[in-house]
Image 1 (tube, rainbow over the protein chains, first blue to last red):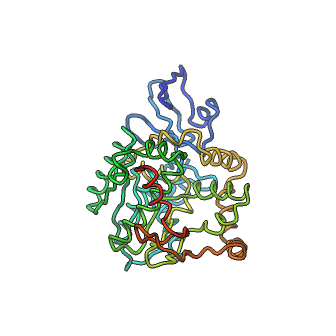
Image 2: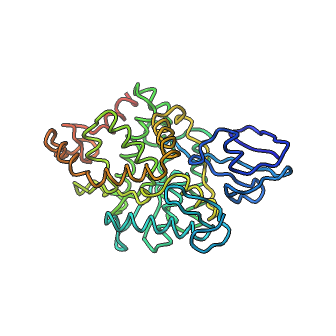
Image 3: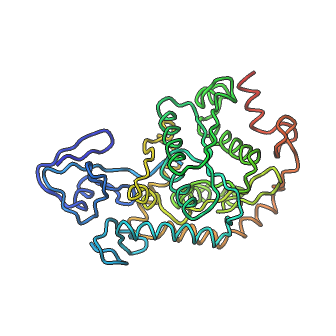
Length: 64
Length: 304
């Protein structure tokens, strides 16, 4: 699984549920959305990300 | 995870409201929150000629789209700050979206007003922080463009995170004047000052970003290069850490403040005269200064 986040790509060698990925990366769920990189759809917190999936972590906090 | 409303598969959980939504119910929720803000603070009517400040980011594009689809008469106003690829992209996104809505977009380029200098060069020449100069220029150009264009209301995309972070900062330093003027509606206290409203105050950045994604709104999500290390981002992150432990806290904080707003207004009125009795000797717009307004003084400094 490839995870695109802040100009970096991180690879995981096993499936993960979205919530677990957020915990693993120590992110605050209030500040991000997890998207399927190909379909641009939002993935819910209980979605299982499979080994071949590519996902994007979109930060939503701006300087304003 | 099922949608709390229609029981279809949900895409997002909003812990502050203890609900989950599918794509369609999320859109309904966002529109409902905007309508609630408009009604609670009597922000706008269908008779208003509205100008939205558009950066090409998620908040401004969303508020423009929502108000347009609600049937309001609403055009866009964009400022090109001249910050290389960031400004190019933000102008491009704003133009594309105005075409999509088939609405007018007024574009002001700071370089046309400051001898070809971009926002960074203006700040450097004036010896000031870029974000502070940017704020001054934006406020001036938004108001003067709205006035000259005959608009009755100016809409900005300030959201719940922006407002709660600003409130947090204002409370920490007890900035009475800022607390007095922080409100979802800033009335037109002079015929040349356009009324300003913030219809997104009940929505978080995450809710608005999700709305943009499900609606296919193509917004710029790169951060302004000068926002790195900004105090507002620090405040937002601190509040989101509290929100993580206590969902709904940001909304409670802001709503509680609005209920008590009169206290701060009174406090400020007792210690200051906030009326703008003067007009700038150069541009003719209201100012609290005796002669030239801050914007015209900035022009002098940069050109001089």
